[in-house]
Structures are given as C-alpha cells and as structure tokens.
Image 1 (cartoon, rainbow, N blue to C red):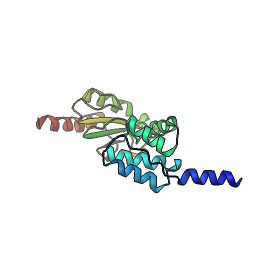
Image 2: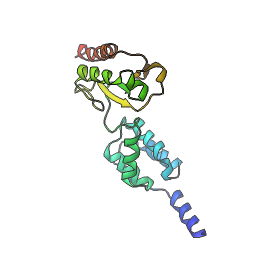
Image 3: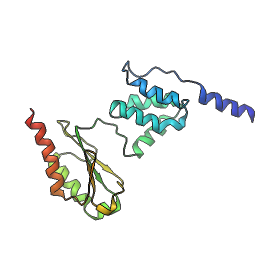
Image 4: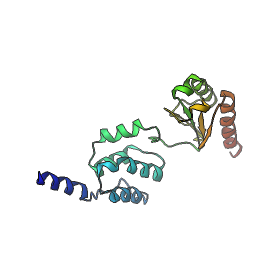
Length: 181
C-alpha cells in the first residue's frame, strides 16, 4: 500500500519538462499553470483555459502538448474540450454571437434566431465569416431562461431578442468591417 502512495506522489510531483510546440513565449503561461498544479491530471480544465486565453483557441498541437504534459490520454482531453462549449478549437472572429439553445430559449424561438443569423452571415453555428468579422456559436444554456430567447453579443447578454434585432446587430458588425476596407 505504501508503494502505491509513493508511486502516486512521485507521479504527481515529478515535473514534466516537455518542450512546447513552438518558441512562442505564451507557452510559458501554459507551462506555469501546469507546474503550479504539480502537472496533476486534475489541472486539465485550468490548463486548457490558460492555453485558450493565451492563444485564443485550442489547436491540435496545444491539445497534444497538454495531454502529454499532464499524462492524460489525448482522447480525454478532446472529450473535455468538445463537451464544454466555452472551449474553442478554431480562431474566433472579431465579434461573437452566442445563441442559447436551452429548453426555454428553444421554445421561445432560438431556432428562428439561428436561421436569421445564418441568412445574414452565410455561416452555421461553430463557423466564422470569411472576413473573420463574426463567429456564430451556440450554448446549451446561458442560465437566462427568464429572458428567453437569449444571446450573447460580444459578451453582452441580450434577452427577448427577435431575429430582426439579432440580424441588425450582426449586419452592423459586418458593415463596420467593410467601411474600413
């Protein structure tokens, strides 16, 4: 029994000094987060948040580095990233529109919001416009059921939003981008 405890302790305190995927100084932030938690597998979500904050999204090389550094199977890392809607595997646009697809929002017209937004941007949820101006995302629930349907437009929660109002805001974002060209 003591040997098992010692092996576990050695595994969690042993630093994993794997080289990062590149010489980018932002990898120091990710490595510091892992080191602060003793490279423990339980640091996965915090490490992924640090990586996404540093790089803007989580690409394959980032996920591989985190998995190897924390001694976690890559499949588990992918599972966590794809389960939680706040993690992104693609770069986001300059503006983001997150549509709530929770039960209350869905019943009150979230699917109509999605259709209107797709019509305006030419993008489906999870995509970004070609000009990198607008990303369309969906969330399982925003916790704003009392103001359904709800969206988050550039970090600002908007409730009781109509498809026309969502389209107008997104068209404004897209026009701003064209005006500067």
